[in-house]
Image (cartoon, rainbow, N blue to C red; front, side, top):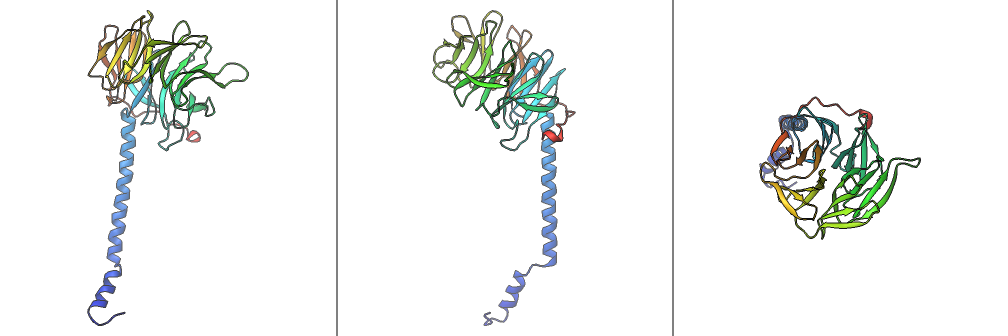
Length: 317
């Protein structure tokens, strides 16, 4: 050690040596930061129980509504206008229901959810997830249930409609139903024809029961289409996120805006509940309903939820 300056080396050595007071202060600060992080995480979790985070899709069974929420992540259940968490996924990537993107309900009232995080379609039974495809799906964006209870699922990644057969001795069975470019929302009409929103050259397609594809709306008419529904008269309805609108398409394939603008901010998922059309809007963080006259009202606003949700069994976490 250089001792040319007799005052320098003792001061430098002292400066490098931590004191018990400094250690104590650092320990207190670390504990305070840790406690603050725990409080923040708890507050965030509680907030998640009270409001929609990013509702992408909606399905209805009688008076009950189910909502797939991408950022909860999980599924909400709405009864009497009050949402509660029906099933909560994990926030860890590639875990079940980390990225729910579509939801449907079968004839028995069982909830079906498409999850892109695990490349799977699940059925929720008694609070547990039942995988139906063994990873045979890429990015599921829409689910339609046919008369036999089998599923037709749009797969954005594989550019096809996938059929998941749930009936028969060898069920479940996964197979390609038909190739469709960039499919999104799907809907089965009364003649068992599958209507498909496509995000490529032609915006709306229809697939016959013989699996032949027909173009209904030519070109890119919509801003960013998501879901499609049909009413009893054969009129199609499409949600348009970029256009902040719901369109009508008549029997000749002519499209016209039906409702647009606020309160719609980014309409995505749609379903029927009686004669009313339900819309999931992730930017508004709400579920809207539209009556036959085009009047929009709120079914479940972002802060109308309850925190008395069922807790997922530990064995299923």
